[in-house]
Image (spheres, rainbow, N blue to C red):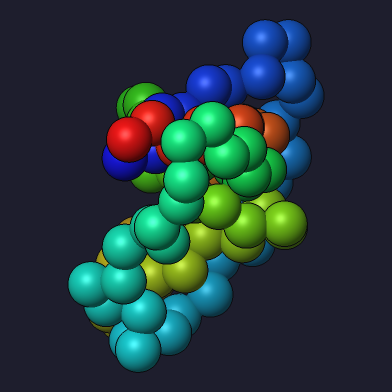
Amino acid sequence: MWQIEDISGAVGVVATILLDASQFGKGLPEGFEGQKESGFSFFEPNGYITSRITDKPVLTAVTESQFKKWKEKNIIAKPAVFIYKA
C-alpha cells in the first residue's frame, strides 16, 4: 500500500489533462517496504482529486465526460512523495 506525503510548501503548477480510456481501472504499481517514488497530488478549487506516481504534472481522464469536467477547472498539481508500506 502506498502512503502519500505532500511536500510541505511545494508550489503548485497547472496540470495537463489527457484522455486515455485504456487507463481505466489501472491502480498503483506494487512496491517494496520503504520504497519511495515521486509523483503529484491533484487539486481542483473545491479540494483534492487524486494522487499519481508520475514524473510530470499530468492527470489522465478515462472518460470523455471526466476529461471535459477537468479541462474546465483550474486543476493544480503539487509534488508528492509516495512511500510503500507493506
